[in-house]
Length: 524
Ligand code: NAD
Image 1 (tube, rainbow, N blue to C red):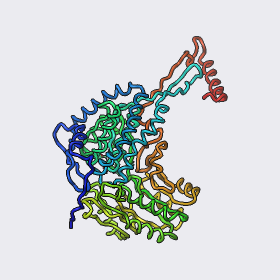
Image 2: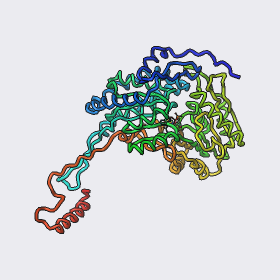
Image 3: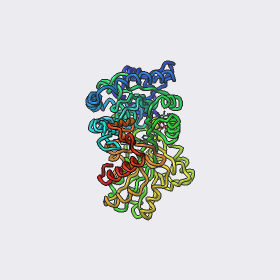
Image 4: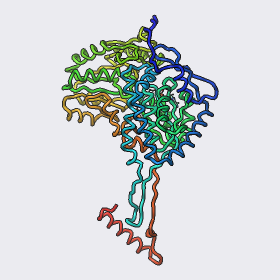
């Protein structure tokens, strides 16, 4: 039975003319469009142009021309754009959240948090970019007579391919350090969630980013992604592991660099002494935040056998009490999945687990009475590795509980996965938690938090290991990856070959004793 969801008042900012103005930036010479819908209702919001190969070619040509001028603009002037943009992004955070919500269906609490990510990234790199991009004197092979300078040059045009789960953060935040470093960007967002990044680009241009420097092309991934990669000088991809492999292969063939931020099957380890209230609240966010559609969220919770029932009861009571519904205010604690298709994937994981012997402790069903793509917060027990959700990412509000007897066993179980994106360890004993963290195969480990502490620490690189990715965002490498190094070396006097008339044996003797002396004097 499909019940009609309750009537909703769409945010006042989401008007037809505003959305048409946003999508007008997307080239679509064939006239073909994609119906971009409001997730909560399924209503069509706007027709999104779909870019042809010729449109993509033109977008790169425009970006390349703009990039040459931008790279020649003094860094101070480039950074001034982002100082102004920071204020505009914060000032318009509510409109950003409106767009994120209509296109993704997430609850407003998550949407407003997402709106804060690009300003945080701007703040961090406004502090670091000048130091990172400054030429560095490294010294040459012969002291005083030679020098070598490391110079950072922009790569050119960076292709950014972004997913739907954090469209504003992945579409805009990952472009910011690329732009600061002097690159142009061509972004391919997911069709479903193109509005918020388009608005972010409009804000950047309002702040003074030159027109043409930040291009957007839209279309289905397998059609539009490959031509973007073929023209790009570097690819920043966020999305599933399967697509990441295809992108990495193409980037490899083209001999361009890439950063791949991929999926996870993230474990939460609760140690014996963990604070029950804090750990269960953390688990609620970890499993159901963003409707379970965060790459770093929790799909596996390992509990000490001695406290299993206590934790399970408290956690399930909180899961059952969650306020799940469609609303454009800050009330709901969980919103919708992104689409009816994605709901099908999440439901199939639960059905497969149940068919193979897992138990549904709570939830487990779609909620068409709340909207077309709502799914209940779901807790499973008895999940094994022959089940889809035992090994692959479900990417929905579905979490499995597992008891463990010893910490060694828990660590073994946590590491028994092809993924390695994020993990979370809970204990009142920081040293014990750190010792566990050191043994977990994961690019991020949060102690007494699920993910926000690691993700918001913009000074530290954040990425996945194993099948969860290659490279990282944030930290120094989050900007330097968008640059090439040029080694400018100067020889002030010809000393690296025998002097006229000098026997080669003598020259070699001098060279070898020079090496010894430099080592002794710690010159090299
Ligand atoms: P996806 O891989 O299906 O799509 C991501 C993007 O790639 C979309 O824009 C899509 O259109 C495009 N694409 C699809 N096929 C392509 C192809 N053949 N060539 C080029 N581009 C192509 O992923 P999704 O379902 O949109 O996003 C969810 C996934 O993203 C989850 O696995 C999640 O864990 C992951 N994710 C990872 C991070 C991270 O930082 N590690 C962050 C957010 C999401």
